Image (cartoon, rainbow, N blue to C red; front, side, top):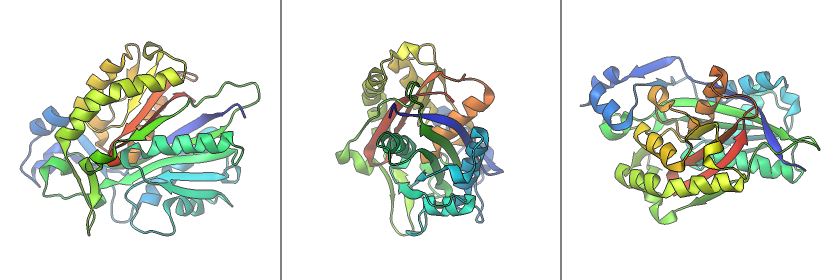
Length: 315
């Protein structure tokens, strides 16, 4: 195998929008307080009748349609999520059932905010090994299900949504469209981002995450570019986990991606965890900000404390 490529992307967000002004009616906060600290203006909120697999299936259906494919063309479904309510059936099996994918391998990947880039690497490795030919890779989270709406330090951050990619084997004469992954974790910092307890609630040590991300991530992101055989200055796009605009903007600068379009979807979508990278990437493609074949760095980081990144070619 010569590797795999992203054939198409798609995304989905619930219709309900929660503004900073709306949040100011719930907790002691303000639009200025939120924007100055995290850069978020709005976020989309799923209703009680919109579970994680519903969000995921909508995004996946759009990616399939964009690729000109049918559910019968898929033999692997991977869903990155950390907000599934039930243990079984998993989200991947439920998405496959919703879409009518006949007999796929179906697995969930729980690496929280780095889930999509882990799942994308897993799909790439599976296709390279010949165990699959075409995969649906989805990042979907309903963070509002695990939010403490009395905690202003976390409730202002989160949103719900999903993003998806169709990943397929490259032809014999094609260049690989998904570069080698750089992934790892800092287990001793696993407590810094948590979804724990009964009921499960999202919590984080914001300053610890900020310091780690702004100091440790730039050399890791540059190494991911190196593995793809590119200099950061050659990147056309940078899509980092959409955690906080005050992390994203300095990170892109420190990576050295001076010519790249930088995803800033966090401003309108909030932190959607595993959905954030495919959601932001799909929007850039839809808006025409990136062109087919453009090299784009995808880099996720967050819970566990895990990270994963790779350079992909834009569909």
